[in-house]
Structure formats: structure tokens, C-alpha cells
Image (tube, rainbow, N blue to C red; front, side):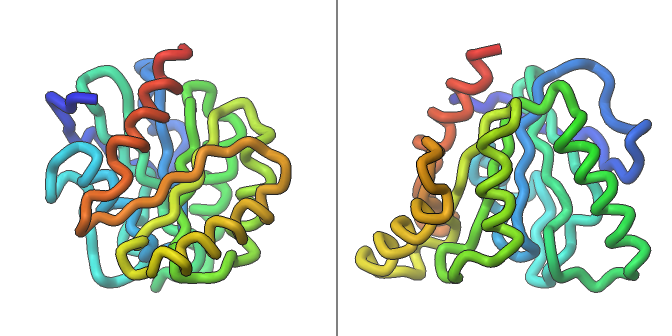
Length: 195
């Protein structure tokens, strides 16, 4: 897809503040420091649209980016580690759960996992639950430039085992090498075209 415009619209901490314009949304979900913001920047061809940080847990809101004035990318707060209060984590959790379960314009959940790590329990739970939902689900293995070909094939096999018989697109990405961009866009365009 040719990205002609990409702009930050809002950061949301409350359900009532979510955009109400009815445009489709593609949400990016993953553990802190998995590279959600970096991947969004790579997809839109901009280095500084989504804020990145070396400190995990920097994304603290549901950040909405309007792409081509047609649909949103939504950068969700990182799962797991973040240097915030317990109350803040509970608040995020409630909003995230409601967003994923109830947001009617949510078209796809792009689930990022670090290719260097063995599947974590929370990621496994998401990978087994999300394919059964009303939205499309894609599993993205990030930081694949850090692995050899054999190690990457092993990780793919491990994740296929986690997914079981479900037919889930799996995309391998590397921000430094710009790997996986075309393939991921191909899936996203197909999802948006089904509306």
C-alpha cells in the first residue's frame, strides 16, 4: 500500500474518548519492548510517527494514527513490564479488554512477539484465543535479524504448535532490515478490502 498520509490523532485512556468516526482500526498488541511503535513507523515510512523508546512500557495510552485518512493504526500499551503503578496497569487492562472485545470497528489484531524468546504464557493465551474472534488475527515475529535461519525455522515450528490447527498468517519482520513490510501490508490490505 502506498501511504500518502499518516498522522497522530489522539492518545486515549478512557472508553468514551475513543474516535467515533467509524473508520476501520488495525490494532498492534505485544509485550513491552517488542517493537510495536518501530514496526508502525516502518509500515508508514516514517521514523518518528509513533514514539519509540529504549525503556519498556513507553506507550501508556491507546495511540491512534490515521493512515491515508481512511483507517487507523492503534498502538496499544505494552503487555507485561512497565514502570507504572498497579492501579494504572489495572486501568490499562480493563480498557484493553473492553477495546478488543467490544470495539466494532476493530478489523484486525496484529500480535507482535519477540522471535528470540520462547513463547510466553500471556502470548500463548492470546494466540489461542484471538483467532476465534470476529476480527482478523496476524502473528508477527519481530527482531528476526537477530536469529539464524535454523533458529527462525525452529521458532516458527514452536508457534505453529501453539496455534494448533488454526490457519493464522505468520509474518517475520526486522525493522533494521525492513523485512516483512510488503507481506504484512498484503495481509492488511486484504483485511481492509473485505469490509
